View 1 (cartoon, rainbow, N blue to C red):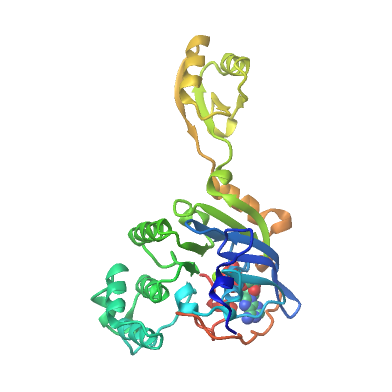
View 2: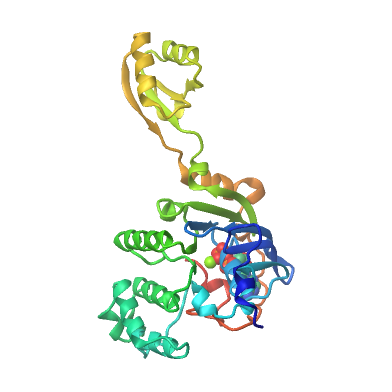
Length: 349
Ligand SMILES: Nc1ncnc2c1ncn2[C@@H]1O[C@H](COP(=O)(O)OP(=O)(O)O)[C@@H](O)[C@H]1O
Ligand SMILES: [Mg+2]
């Protein structure tokens, strides 16, 4: 179905390029995605997080028209994927476990894709250089490492110069250097105003990459916000042999302060990001300071609390639950997607 360009731009009162609204997916009796709603803003990198089996890939597949929602909608530029006039030029997608024809070179794979969309070969070589595999891409894709497949998938997603990018577990299989490269690359794309949604089962892997987070567990939203909000209020750790006197002085100055036994003996936690003020108050109170530093929120611990709390405990860890048979996908596959692989075995490792 063709929708006027004006309608594709009109995303209503929200600036979001991706809008997921009350989206659900059932496989038989199994609720893989449960009434999920969130939005993804342009110019930002949004991390779509949750443990393995939480429903990330299923959600992304629904957004890309590869899985039919049981209820709700996933919209890109205000319309469903199937309604996009120029999907390749609007959304670039790389789903996990993407397969390329093993006997064909990565470059040829992209050239075929480009040709069917009227994109010149020069763009293919430009992209291969951009993702850092210009030479390797001339070899057969069958011998590619996971990291090379990720980079090739990224190049394929970018072929049509889309302004929305959806990447499923793009850090999987990348070494630390590759993850750093990906971070810079995505940051560059976001600075051009692109909307970037990346999934990961590990918060620590994308913590330094993302601006916003959408965290799900068992198909349900458990937390949404900026990464700064996730870090919470700035707190300071100060270690002293005079914690009683120091806590008194800090509280006297109107600060929230208390012992922090988890940080060892003499540790005091203060709700402020102002290290100088804490140091000055300690000096004025005449107590020695043995350590003074910003206390970073342990995001990984928070993430596990959010996703593994009793009510959100990963249902896939419960034993004995038989998996329903895979349902065939619907709709045309977007770039680099593999519509024939929906089984749970092919999801995250
Ligand atoms: N085609 C399918 N048929 C049956 N169950 C499925 C299918 N696809 C996914 N699931 C199940 O739905 C849940 C969510 O899977 P998935 O979206 O792949 O999670 P994630 O990407 O977060 O790891 C898992 O329990 C998975 O086994
Ligand atoms: Mg997945």
